Length: 417
Image (cartoon, rainbow, N blue to C red; front, side, top):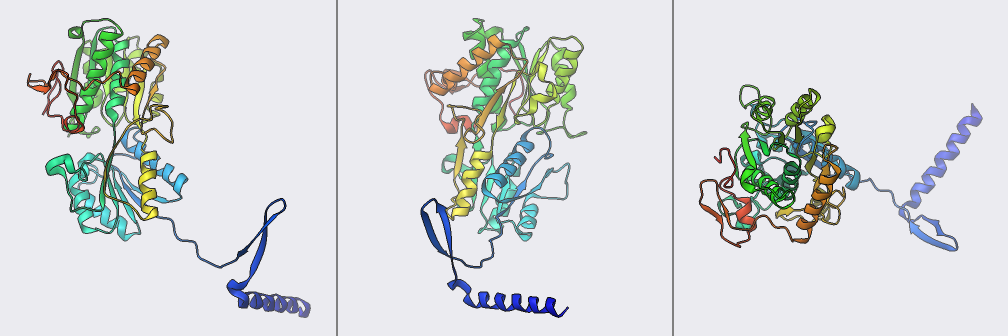
């Protein structure tokens, strides 16, 4: 016992001597053969990672919009070492007593130094939250509050609230092209969520892509392509509140439509198509939002246009870490060198097994035309659904005209408001 305690005492003395030297101690580290460097050793406490609160409108595992954001959060953790805290199902049906601004305050009180609000529906709540916490940087994904050209939507007083959104119009055009190349009946259905400027421009983009490929690659008369839009009333099914997307998809197929393109956050359209195909019907579907969405019925999936939020989120969070965050509006597009590059492209399209090899080649040709600018579908003459002009002959749409589309386009069947 005496020897043991003597050894402990010796170690303690040595520890005190080292501590007394403090920051004056030096260590020599070999960095390469024949090269040495000398660095002062210091004792510091590592800073805690930036905690980011992410508010999702739907379930975190919806295989659609919300899951795409959640996976971008995991990407942020991997790339930048931040901590992501998620609250999902923040909507009036799932959490009727919870408001977005309440969630913002709770997350900040629990240590969040940045907030992402990830739905168009969150406008009021995130603007209130940003005003209440002006020193906390926030992003409203899909919003336009930081866009000076956005008229009454612009909120210059909210200097901590920026916006980011992907140019999904391209992905939807590609989806429309794949649908028009595949249909055997010439009848397409669009399973829409609620009606606003965003959903009108995305549904219209599908229609424009379908019309182009129907006419230019199949040589068909544009007037012979049917395109119907049915809206369920929200981004996903809420029993007793929205139309049931499963029933809407079945109604589409019962009416002679053989390709359903989804604009909602979840995969009911694809699931129904898979069930009916298994029963012997020649039907197909295109889901939305999430890169892996085709997995639920791959054989009849023509592909999926999806958001890849990771690269944009990394750029924004890095600006916070660097101390130069600015409340800006960003509308990012695909990386045309490789629209499916996970580190660079904000919008992608994964072709599904249901797309024939011949049509897949034509889709690639269409993508190449979008990439080099030889195909621009937002060029007049284009009329709104009621016949009033949207774009004059040869007029190229501005970002504002596309962003704030007031109606569906002429030739589309379905409600515009």
